[in-house]
Length: 136
Ligand SMILES: [Zn+2]
Image (cartoon, rainbow, N blue to C red; front, side, top):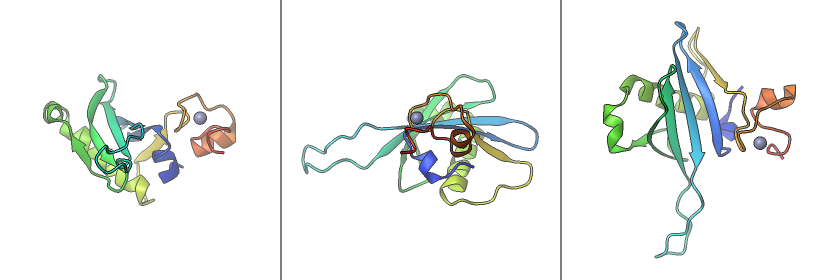
């Protein structure tokens, strides 16, 4: 089961499937911590969202603030598969709010650690989506 701690671990990747077996894979990469030079305070944490529909090429769709499930799209995202972007936003809301999925839908991690992206091997890591070191 994927939850918020997996989602925001830094390098989370997961697959959303509908009852027809169609898939959207989503990857969230955490921005490096940067200070706002004017205030000296850190910028809010941002995640860069990449996705792929089925086996299409990966596309960078935009940025996500940790306090929202809305992707701030890059201008190029207008030319992408809008349904795939909508599925990604929908899945972010499901995971963030631990909502139940409609029948036949699934959301699973891709077998890689949500924090360091290494392959997960033992059953506990696979269940959590985080490897033994990264789950602390
Ligand atoms: Zn890890």
